[in-house]
Length: 109
Length: 236
Image 1 (cartoon, each protein chain N blue to C red):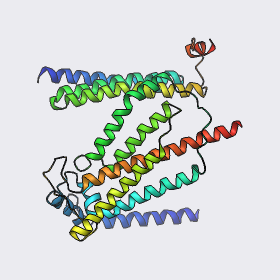
Image 2: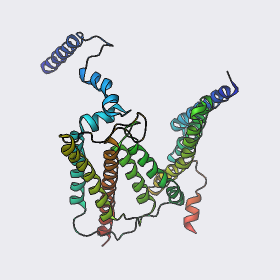
Image 3: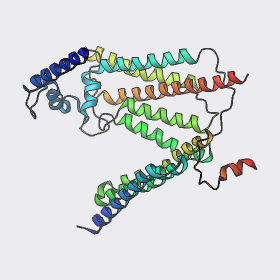
Image 4: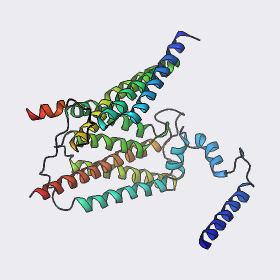
């Protein structure tokens, strides 16, 4: 078992761990905004590390997996920000514990 | 109560009939002569690596021409419903955010490229004209979402759409005049897994991909106009 396979398995484990975290976050977090954190940030990291891990284990698909990871990095923030902005615009309620709303402060200027 | 009993008996009869019927078949044995024929003969007859594409374009090409026509009729229906009269887009929609705008600029060419790749490799890899065309249309949808002033040049899109459909029919007629049957294979099969293989599938799928992409983009344009026209009408 080569070193690349070990690193690949480690990365895949990290990816699975972050997927698990985001699933727990989706269930446990209180409002739309924090749930979007769980649904976008950690799934992006989980998907990237799983894909790169698979690429490291099979060298012939390494370049493909790097390209895939690049596109996930490119597209996930776009969809995440557009969704969360739409949620803000339709006034999805915040949880009671919210302390700061930078968007409102900026709009109020 | 008696109705429930009747229903239950009826369901039981159906389940028993299915079970008796299915027990005649053994698992793991070739049941379909048609499927076996396709799997055995696709590569020597058509030179396409993707059996599904060879079925849809080679063995049942006329059927696919009908599907293209169905899609064309659907687009026409949407256009008639939503695009009667002039394009009255006055109201500016809410501006999209910075990330969407910049990201769209980065991603849009890659979406078009991927769509073109998918419909050009329809005879080699999973996918084909319809899937690639739909992907191209999503690229235009992204443009509409990011930049509210986007408006595609409908005349050029109609031209592309018409040319795509025309390609299909012309290739079919070529087969009719050269080989004696509509959509007969008039091009050489080539070597397996080459881009230029599979006979008439590559030009047909390029035509279908362009046609579907422009058609769906036109539908998106119609729908966006409908949203914007309604809002403009509501404010007046």
